Length: 155
Ligand SMILES: Cc1cc2nc3c(=O)[nH]c(=O)nc-3n(C[C@H](O)[C@H](O)[C@H](O)COP(=O)(O)O)c2cc1C
Image (tube, rainbow, N blue to C red; front, side):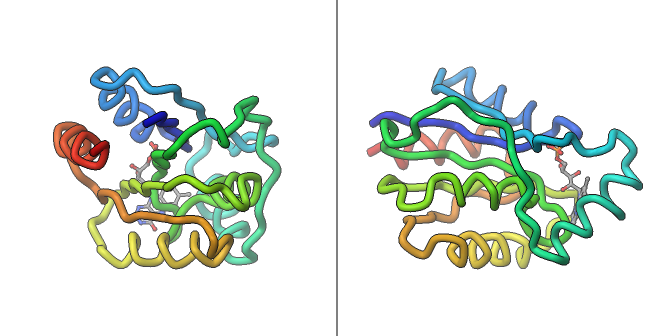
């Protein structure tokens, strides 16, 4: 089973989570980055850039990941919740792998713990490519819970 971790992170919570989980697995991993970086200023990023993208469903250009996802059996996709769903660079990534035949496990984290966020994310992902097998992973869980979940799903 060949696994790829793909993540997006702005203030590095997701990056830290992924790095700690991956000490256990050593999977290949790539970070999604918007072609034009978001502002470092929270208010500009959250209330201007991100909000406009989410509201208008704009899928921004992302940097080339230089990876052939077709060689992986599964993708572990990690992101923070932005405005009740995934950040729009995640949408751009899914657009770029349309028709992917493996499984995509979804892991989200956010400031508040509203279970609706994961439901929104799953629905919005499936809307981009209904043919991809998206599987709900974990929402706001610990490093160890992620490790246990990922190991269990290997079998
Ligand atoms: C643009 C933006 C929008 C956000 N929207 C939400 C939200 O709707 N609900 C929530 O609980 N947290 C929200 N957050 C908080 C992040 O989901 C949370 O801090 C996350 O851990 C950040 O991950 P990161 O450090 O990997 O970027 C938002 C943060 C940003 C920057």
